[in-house]
Image 1 (tube, one colour):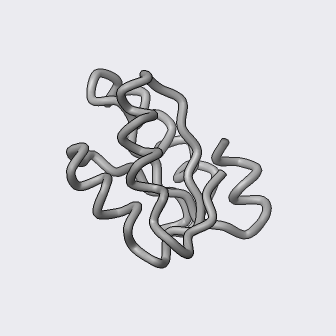
Image 2 (cartoon, rainbow, N blue to C red; image 1 turned 120 degrees about the horizontal axis):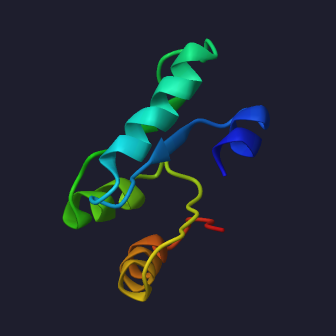
Length: 87
């Protein structure tokens, strides 16, 4: 999900499930080691409530999700802010 977005000129904020922080850190390291500028790929270690605040920000233009039905419901509700275009 991240590589095509970055190649298209977008930045990526990634909130991993709380049970896989090592995977999140490994992915960040891969992008850093590849020489990606700071801020192009960023892991967010935040709560569900904080995720809803991030999705409500007008600078966030898209969202992709792989996760539980509960997570999908929460993200779907937060992503349905009028004027936002989400995938």
